[in-house]
Length: 130
Image 1 (spheres, helix red, strand yellow):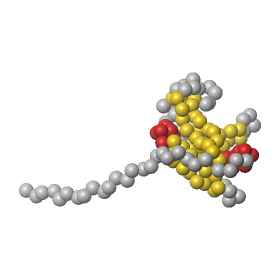
Image 2 (tube, one colour):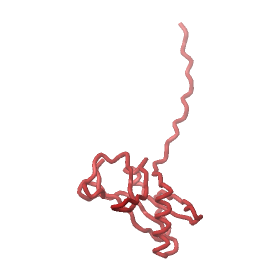
Image 3 (cartoon, rainbow, N blue to C red):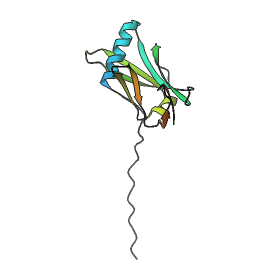
């Protein structure tokens, strides 16, 4: 009887959770931070419990250094201006794989998430369920 030869398994590389930030969003962030005029400002995006569907997106300015457990995205706009986006680790559980974009249409303009974890959203588009 022949014994099967054991082959060492390839190590599994753990993917760091994250979001994709589009060039359009980077440009919109740059414009908003420039308009605000506060040195060291970043944009904080995340998820908070609440809203009519259970969770709502958070998009706000963040002044000063990021928190110890934040995921930091240091990006560069088309004109070479540095742009920083920070996301807390807890929010990354709900945002992993999401695309953060800026959309401008005839009727509205603003930041928008395309989130693969979103199962349903409310009519206003600001809250969702997973």
